[in-house]
Amino acid sequence: MGLIAYFDCPTGISGDMCLGALVSAGVPLEYLMEKLALLGLGHEYRLAAGMVQKQGQAATKVEVHLLTEPSSDRHHHGGRHLPEIEQLIKGANLPARVSRWSLAIFHQLAIAEGEVHGIEPEAVHFHEVGATDAIVDIVGTCLGLDYLGIDKCYWSALPTGSGTVRAAHGDLPVPVPAVLRLWENRQVPVYDNGLTGELVTPTGAAIAVTLANQFGTKPPFNLQKLGLGAGSKELPLANILRLWIGTESQTAKTPKEIPFGQLETITVLETQLDDLQPQAVGYLLESLLHQGAIDVFTQAIAMKKSRPGILLTVLCAPENQNHCLNLLFRETTSLGVRVRQQQRYALEREWQTVVIAHGSIRIKVAYSYQAGTKIILNAHPEFVDCAALAKATGQPWQLIHQQAIAAWSSLSKDSAQG
Image (tube, rainbow, N blue to C red; front, side):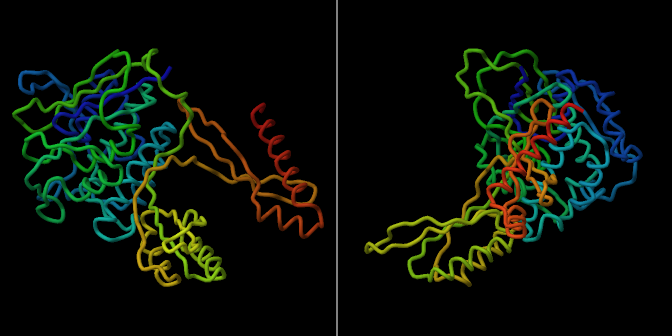
């Protein structure tokens, strides 16, 4: 049975506090140093850990000491764009879950920063979170969770803090814009604990919103160990992140676990139409998909004055929201479009190709990971490929489809045996 981690954040959360709590809970510092060296940044920093006192309580403080000369503001050190960070992580040969989690954290952060600055995620130039110490914090946290065998992560509600903080773009109000956007995208429960200062950093917020199965109260579980990670600030309340680790309670009435995919944020656009020609609807659906919509669908509805109409729904990535909105207003008679952000679990997928008697067919294979093991959940032949072969050969589409499934099943079985 996998372990559950609950992050209790009375004074907030940052990347170094996560590392401190994980080392306190039993992750060897030497293991983190060995795996982090795979990133190729060892000449830029030194990792150290020690015990400190926070309001009379002992906790573990992990620090990333930069070895290269930073600018006058340490937050400006080592700024990187998302593609460069992704290349570092993908090329490091890290454990599968660590790589997947780390990439997801930076992707969520890029989306939030892009929304703040009005640019695409790939164009975001990370200052604070692209610096060497933040990369070490994020990847190191994922390494620690993987080392301990954590399968589910839960977080407490997060304190807002107050005041201002110095950042790459000048003085910013607390919480900083990127943190607010991350909280909004995940609908994170927050509260004011009366403490002044930046309590939740962008790094800490990104780790939490990406890895959290749920925010709020502790789930029912059997506590096995506790990790205490110290923050840098001296506060009236002990500045300690408390990491509770244990196994799921046998008495807890929880649904049977299935291997979910990656949690991601999508934008949902909705509008109802009662005066648009049917031909225009078909054109619009194709145009939206061409503009990057994930999916588009319509439902028949009854509108005011008993007029029949359709409810048009568009699912898209947040970075494609404006493109789809512009198209909706340009190609329809709508006077308003509802916009909301939602979370969804999306299975990872890949293309495989099978060869049947009549030609080749692409197979879309959906999979996820459970306890580090890749689990294939479904596979479907590509409709366009089946249709093309059916037209070219005169064979029934259904027969082509069945043969493709049979060929993939045989190939998958041979691979498993091999």
